[in-house]
Length: 493
Image (cartoon, rainbow, N blue to C red; front, side):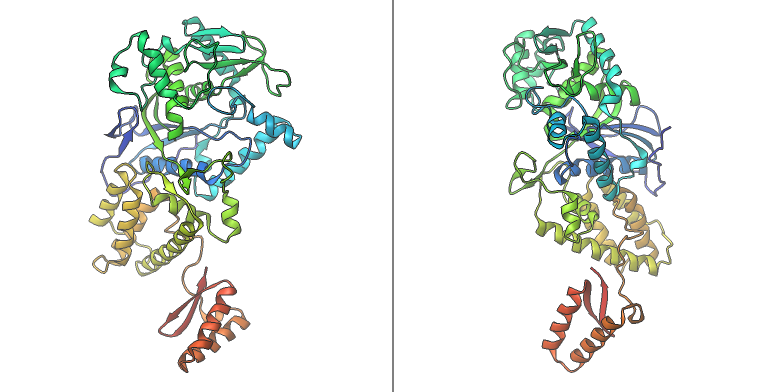
């Protein structure tokens, strides 16, 4: 049974606009069925932990789902788990990542998949994704559906066999490469003479040469079993395993239908994986795979994409070990457009953590003053409209700061702004997980109270050297130290 990402009523009728990779234009969103949105996101290959570069894609897709939900839709979400068939590179060549890890750790591939799939779901839950409203199908659970789709492609004349398996012939799909980055004059010319050129443009730098293939962009639908393969199934083409791309087409169709409203993924998926999905799905179904393709940009470190191969991968656990709240990473992600590469550093993350703690405190104060009563206003309508304009979270956060500090708004109106934008941002602004208001003196341990009283006495005596020494001592104990009208104020860091 589906557990819908439930819609939330907001005082706003502004339309949702998205940049559709297929058209390259900003378009108003509308779903196939009023009030229901189907959404598919390319998920992780679970041979290892997902690093924070991977996690950015799921925060972006979560904001998209939340935005569509607050616009009055029930969002049916699928994030696939690739637990078979993804080799090193898009060419379906080289070492199988699942097999490499299973051999190294002396475990079965399914044990590896279960371990890292669980860790992935735990990580995204810490980033405030509602994992109960998402389906996480595994590729190994849909091998029969993949085989049936491949059989249909073969019956329709879209395939050919070579020594290592069955391949899709891109020359049988005149629109191959239509998803992003292909010059318009080539797309318009559907003759076979330009298909090789088109394919070359679409996959340049991504696919190694296989001389047995008819076209450079042809891709494996079924790979024949190799000696030592740990995962293989019987099929009309012999024992082996499905190619990487077919799993998404099969699972999207089985769980969401032949045409999906929204398909998301990283920009690195555009040229190969998503063009291959389009080709095989549309040849089988005779209709468009996806109405809106929405892609997120990379997270980078010193200009390089975060990648295990570059050995610059950082994990959510690394962030937690530094005492930084996981939602600080979400806040960092939301400070840039999802379509813009974002440079990561621990300095920028710590600044985001500091900003989020201050925002939680400001929102808590507004909520207290408003007694929890949210009053709709032009400001609350405006902030939602900002967020619905192609997920403009940086602008929405900037406007939120203005509103919680604005003396023009009443406390209830300001709380209305917070209540309106929280369902989209997902930062727990209405119920902060970290206490931000200062401790009352009686709430502190006895030895800490003594330090506070000693510091207050030092400040009163203008003994700033002792005051600073005691402040550092209190900070080392894990407190945030501020000076208020009544003396030293301590709050959680």
